[in-house]
Image (cartoon, rainbow, N blue to C red; front, side):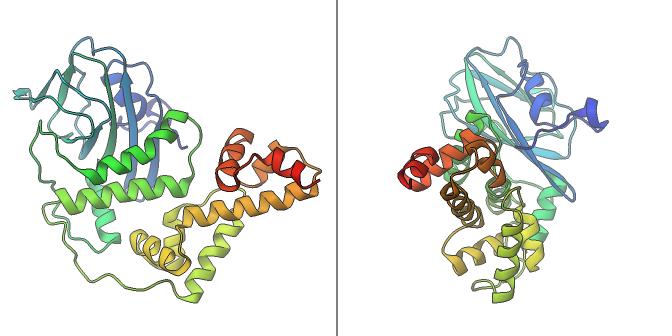
Length: 313
């Protein structure tokens, strides 16, 4: 999982994710947050969670050419919202709804109950980059109503798919994270973009044999580390969305699952040798630590690495 270094460390502007966003809600630290860099900036997701109401309205996040797309993980029965210093009529938000916030218009909230939400940080520049990569038109604005909870099953399912990894607090696979953040940005362009229509027909079919070989060789070369979906797509000369779709059509699985399967295969080979510690095998096969290795291996194989090795003795 990539941690945002924060303005004190990199000298950059404060952005609406990670520690800075948590500060605005009077929380000492977010449960966890992730940011992935694009050429034009980061995409990020931050979990805001508290068993207590906010002691007073949230602090101003500051002007930013970006939006927050919030998924309410829990009910928000009693809260107020302001925009441009003006109070908005704010109905209760039920768990699972999505709300959008324009960071150019100084959104403020005051929640009188405990609260739990995920906030996806989407800069305008990065949305434009995602649109360019995926052949979408983007006029530079999103279309929605402030202080409204939208029933958006795509954002809900993407956020809930990410939530267990955020709750665990450990490292995340770069491919998995790229899939989620790209999917959120692409969906927001399609549903809320003022002109989120296709600019050109996407290419059809799977990867060419050369493209597939390049992608698989690159993933094999990074089996002990990590490789981003963006780099794999660039290696094949495709947009991220087209690459992910074509890879699945060619192999029957996602790049993230393909890489994870091959990490498990390498781990099995090392386990058969019976000489190395599980912690060393975990690191060599690209897992964050032995606990992460055991969890993934058990899910794939049906038993723990130690038991699997003993069963081969």
